[in-house]
Amino acid sequence: MTNPSTRPFRSVLYVPGSNPRAIAKARDLPVDAVILDLEDAVAPDAKPAARETVVAALGEGGFGPRTVLVRVNGAQTEWGAADLAAIVPHVPDGIVLPKVASPEECNIPGRLGTMRVWAMVETPEGVLNAAAIARAPEMGGLVIGTNDLAAALGCDPGADRMPLMVALQTCVLAARAAGIRCIDGVYNAFRDAEGLRAECEQGRALGMDGKSVIHPAQTETANAVFAPTAPEIDLARRRIAAHEAAVAEGRGVAVLDGAIVEQLHVDSARRLLSLAAAIAARKA
Ligand code: COA
Ligand code: MG
Image (cartoon, rainbow, N blue to C red; front, side, top):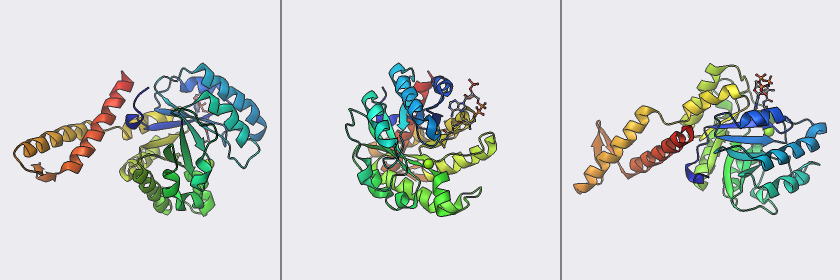
């Protein structure tokens, strides 16, 4: 298992827990993480069977380096408690809780070992409490549920998502303040690669770690956009070298390509290089 702090989360694939064929397929896709879903991807009548299917899949394993998360039904639903009771003993990497409104909801009874809690932020209350939710104990990251959020707000996100921008940025702020991950919401038109790419680029520019994806066809784009590029890797290396040379000469600030390089740039450069190394290790 890789160090959690350097694990990539470029592509986080929802897989319906009711669909063993999709679960099998997910084991071979180059996604960084899977969310085996018991909530909205599963019809009410299929919930108990899906729970058994996901329990069996966790027992079987075979997900390799992918982070394995399970989204349970909300605690207030008739399935929530039974989902947790069935899933927690199988110790996935994390449990995704839907529609989290407060940090108190993130306390999972019987949570084991390295298992983390991931909170979906997809309600107005969740956005307003995002900072506190992100600081709840054992939190792995926030997953933004843009569809539910837009519906609850009564907004039309449009192509540029400006109506959601405050919420998206609030989630990034909350996650960064708490030192956890922030995963952007899904792009619904799963055959529209161009639209997906634009939305991934926007998410990356905002500081997201990766994109929620719903179909295998979205994986490659998310992986490409959220990976450090060759020029970024080159710049990171040159910034580190320039700063080290400056420090050796007794200066705290270097100048590279006409711009200053300070310790904060070196820290960002090192983070970028360790993410690039983690991605390279995954490809190998
Ligand atoms: N995870 C794993 N495999 C998936 C997948 C997913 N999310 N979505 C599709 N696949 C698989 C299919 O099983 C199929 O595999 P096969 O060739 O072995 O039969 C292959 O990819 C191609 O699928 P395709 O026929 O193009 O799509 P579809 O019409 O079967 O399904 C969706 C389209 C949108 C219904 C499906 O992608 C899906 O259910 N996505 C997840 C939705 C979800 O989880 N929503 C809740 C969170 S927002
Ligand atoms: Mg939702």
